[in-house]
Amino acid sequence: MTAAVAEAGAAPVPLKYRRRITPGKAIRETLFYIAVVIVVLIALFPFYWILRTALESNSQVAAGVGGKNGIIPGHLSGQAFVNVFTQQKFLTPLLNSIIVALATTVVTIIVASAAGYALARLNIRGAGAVLAFILLAGFFPVLAMIGPVFLILKSIGALDNIYPLIIVYLVYTLPISTWLLKNFFEQIPKDLEDAALTDGATRLQTLRKVVIPVAIPGVFTAAILAFILAWNDFAFAVSFLSTQSHFTAPLAITTFGQSGYQTFYNLIDSAVVIVSIPIALLVLFAQRRIVTGLTAGSFR
Image (tube, rainbow, N blue to C red; front, side, top):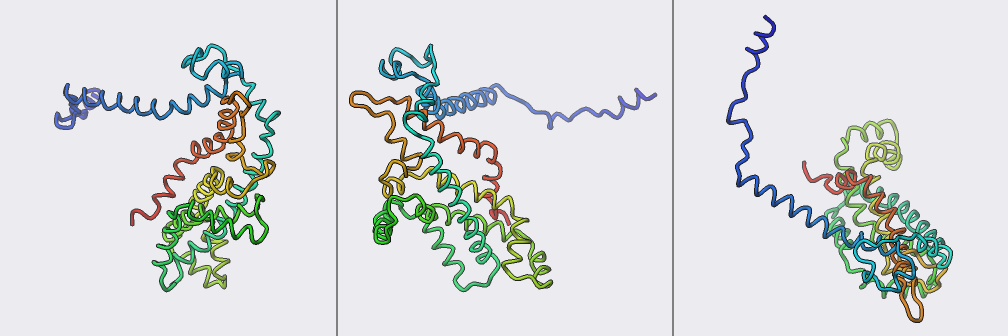
């Protein structure tokens, strides 16, 4: 009886809902996935080549990069990674980059949170023009700003010092962080803020105790983007720093591997791999937050 009911209740799937794969469609899908694989391999090949070169010994590099060793070398060595820290003193530039990038991220989040909240909630005259100016500043050519900033730092005696870079890097980080946080704050219901204001909280207290905890995903995304932008900077560092002990990591890499007769690319590429690891981990584990943050406010 039960089996008969089950068979009677299991209605066949109508033909119009069944997925039909025609030979032409199968060929198109196959060609599409082949094209995707080719594009991915082309995109990843430079990263593979950098890692491959970083794992070569000095003798292999002297024999010719990609020459006798081929695409897949028969012998790999991690000595270049050791030499980068022991011979090239790469730990100091790394620490400089960590200090500057983290400090820039903290300052960016504080300023961008206040600015984004003001643009999102306060009735500021010309708020649209202010936001347009912020976005314009984010696309302004960096090279055009190096000259004026150089003269300002020189006049106050702040050249060849990593700490002024914390303020200079705000040129990179503030526009995108302010725009991103403004969009996040606009999605938060105003009732939460009105309740806090009614209880006697000030605007800053409301921002710190009510809005920021709710907007943690947006704040986290802005912090990640700010850290990446500050960590990767080369233009400002090479323009304002001259002492090797003050170099940031991207700038220090340009001094590695140079000798009178040979350039040891394994030292350069090993440093590139080391510098890329924090960014790769951030993007890998926070890619969804980054995408969510960049698309916040797109659909209303």
